[in-house]
Amino acid sequence: MEQNNDQWGERDLHQFRAVLPKVSRLEMEQATHETQCEERWKTCFQRLTDVEKGLMRIESRMMAMGGTVILFLAGVLVTLLNTLG
Image (cartoon, rainbow, N blue to C red; front, side):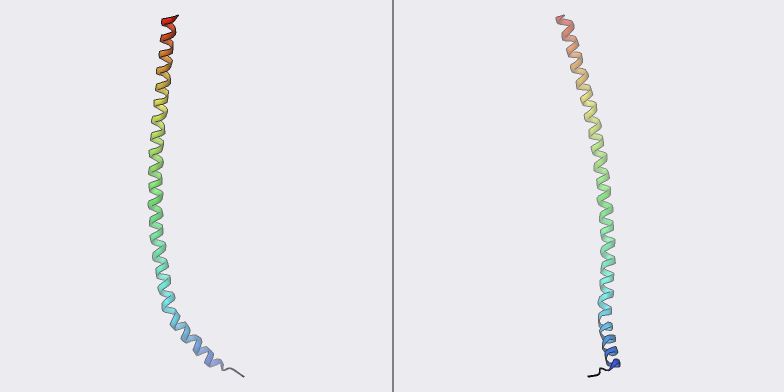
């Protein structure tokens, strides 16, 4: 059973033409999806940067408060030792 090459070629061409609009639509949807995801990631990274800045500010304040408490307690200890001694 010999097959006609022209028949297969026409059939393939017909299938290609039927699939081409679907492929184009999928490519467009993929490009749109990538653009949207890129914007979302930019937003997420900006928010993470803002959170990191806030945490650094809180950490700095905590260190300052800790130093203040240590100095206060050291002063109280020195005062007690001088008063009792």
